[in-house]
Image (cartoon, rainbow, N blue to C red; front, side):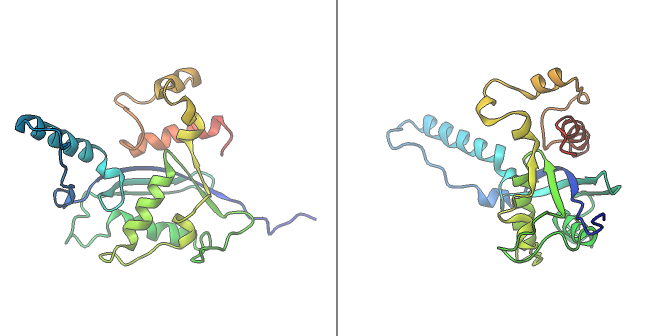
Length: 221
């Protein structure tokens, strides 16, 4: 007899982009030059370079960055959610991107994640597939929990979540990252990104298109 209770895992393709928080300038560390630097111009140049390096990647870190644009596609169940920060500025009356994505996930998959840190089902009801999904989940979980939002995610969705698949790691293992580029991957796999695609987490819409093709080629879907 067929098991009609079998859980079918939803596979959620996630494209996302981040941006620095509005008060990022208040959060820049007080950089200092090495003690052996005596020339003022050299000291100033070192501090300026340190600040520029900080600003270049700050948006990818919790508290320093915020979700700017998120796309989540569930191809099997024909569900899709899209949220841009444009028009969601403070005072607009619209939910910020993090809360809009949270509301959609919990509405569409109400039983997928537990609030218990140690509760793990034998088969997950939903998994995330993305470029760097851990970054997305940490940003989403921490941002939703900030006092200004006061809407923590279920713990199993974002903290210690193993139910995600990183297409970056699947395509370019860390030990190969020095030699293998996305250009190499796409050439060898016969994929042509749209003109202007410079890498993941810049154009979420194109990311989801590429995720679909890459995940299909390795049978993740």
